[in-house]
Image (cartoon, rainbow, N blue to C red; front, top):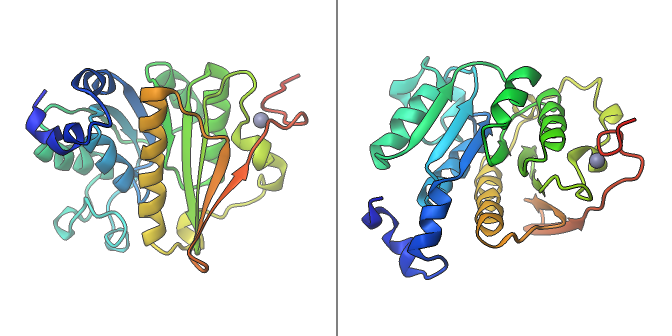
Length: 244
Ligand SMILES: [Zn+2]
């Protein structure tokens, strides 16, 4: 491991060299290579995480560039996952990135998740989000979800242990099953994606190092400069947590 790359991190004394090595052995599955993935993976790499699978089938469009800052104009038309792989390896030469150019479906998620320590949901539609929630719950893999729309960003974490709440405990599927709205079509103030992706890293780092598990849905609200933490408990009526 090239310690110069992590000099500021180690000098902070928030973690030791041994802990940095432990971080570097964790495998992270990221769904979505868009606006939340960019700040997320930027700071995950700078925290010492090195092994990622990123799945996304999109190509880079001009309208992505204001939020997806690891891409440039020269990348237009290329697959997002391949460019991310190339770009991050220019800074961190020892990364292991498996760039998967496809739309994540339930079978892929189920097979891939079993090979990883964390699932990071940076997807932009409800169908995929519920599939990720289902799979992570079934396999008991910790899940960090980031999402945003209009002037609000949200982050939710679940360790997926037996008494942990799931995404569906907060947002029951029935309320959204007819919805075709994606975050892209709803629009988003881009700076919120930076807050969401960065905050997901705070959770990832603290849970990896110290098993600190937030019990909140964290909401970033642009209009009033607000950061709110809403307590979340398992819903006894949740059909995902309590399958019949
Ligand atoms: Zn639930």
